[in-house]
Length: 230
Image (cartoon, rainbow, N blue to C red; front, side):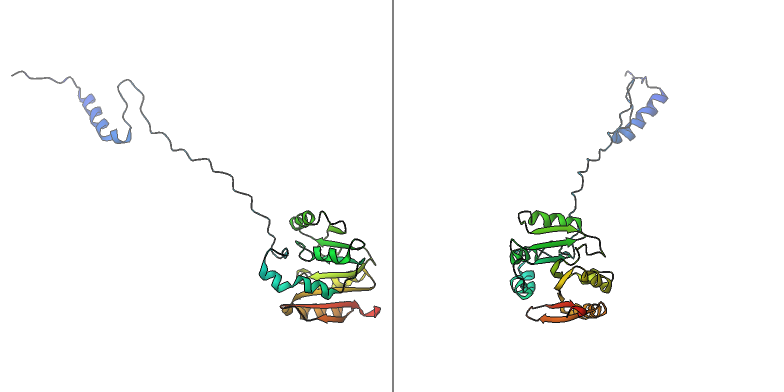
């Protein structure tokens, strides 16, 4: 019987055993070759996050978009209650997205004007786009505590669901007096629970409640005039 003699040295045998153990991980180096290393995992490139829309909370809505909101606000009934006549100049203070602005524009007609103000750039941008064809509407950015209205120029100033945002109701209402014509009025509307603080502030600012409309489902509507002008 012929005996086969191995030519493997102890060092070579040790290396072969090591290769058997590490073969599953691909860590064995071949004779005269480079060690094979596993390919590093590649993290897929993440797509940029979509730009989030600007937060427009508290800026009202647009008529015809949400039926429940229209039912609560009753825009046709509300505008009729304001008693607007063609040719008047009206300020829509804190107009937001302009829920009433278009109807105000229609009420004053081509000879009148509506100045819609707000502090929010995104709301103003959207309102300008909506009112771009209405020549009797001016959209104006103002500072939070400054009405930004010309003195003695407005027959009606509307504050719709906005007085709770004012840092000082009394001071703001006092400034609004300067913008009224001699017989000008301020119309304020809000949820009924918000009526007491507004009335208290109006009295401190020297106004009287000259009339009030109670035909809205959820909101009060009252009209103020400076007590000295009555």
